[in-house]
Length: 249
Image (cartoon, rainbow, N blue to C red; front, side, top):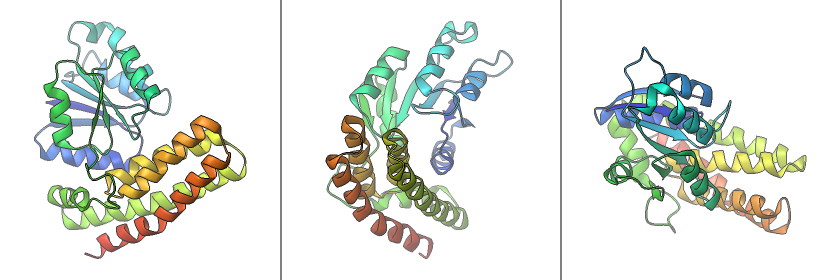
């Protein structure tokens, strides 16, 4: 298949490219909503069989990109399958997926088996999870093992190290948003942390980040969110240590 991946998070985009290309697909990647629309509707392009669209993109969100793609003259007669990607399958995200005209929703991390399950359904707006089923586990070693199967050792190590650096940066940005009393910015950063950590097998951190995002959406910076932030902090150190160890293996 020809696949368009719209994902603004560098480490997740690189992982998706490696995964899909190893599976034999031809892949084009973009980083924002306007670029996704331009690539999908290019009258001189070869078109795409599948679009994997992050729900939250710079420029404009993925669901707005889908609306523009679906209504464009170049895609109305040869409509590609479109699956949304999100770190957290909230009721709001599911509704946005239904409303924009996407064919389904995948929760990160992207996994080939979850993608195949979603594509085997004719039309489905329910979430298909790429996360491991062992919800109580702190780590999912198969996530990085799969990456090592797809990439040379030096590239895999560089990507894992970049992921750890990215998570450290995001924790600093989240702390600044919290100090400034900005629950929207803090929630957006928690969403990013969930997406990155899940892609690289840090399940406890992913779960804690999802909990913080939900708490901030429900009540802002109040006691419930403070408890969720403490859980996030508890998960952060072990996750970073885990990633650092992987680069030494």
